[in-house]
Length: 158
Image (cartoon, rainbow, N blue to C red; front, side, top):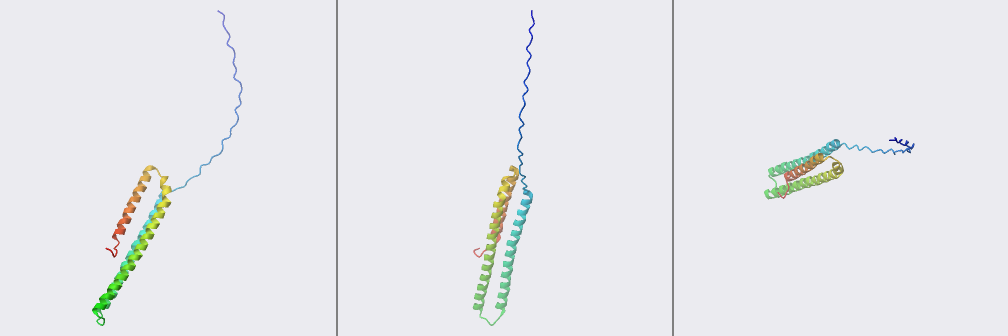
């Protein structure tokens, strides 16, 4: 049986073109969420101290008015009914002033908190799911704390 020769097959030389890949630089997002959270906590803490301080000042003002009333009531020269009416008027004015001051500060405090929450919301959206859940829990606890503070501030309606 005759043997057949295999044909020789040679691969052609193909030169591939050089393709340059563009340099793509991904911007670094330096969002230090821990620092932002600490800053927000510090601002909220400072705002709380301001509100509490305003309440203390209002209370002290009422105490001063009470002391002045006690001095007036001790004076025998004025009529008893006039002294009582003057004392009611003074005390009512002091309480109203303190209540208006505390209410104004509470409104400012709420406004600051709303601004902070709006500013932090984009950062929270970037957080991993577990951290985002913790941030939401912190928001709920902060709202509960604010409502407790607001409920403990005495008003003239109470």
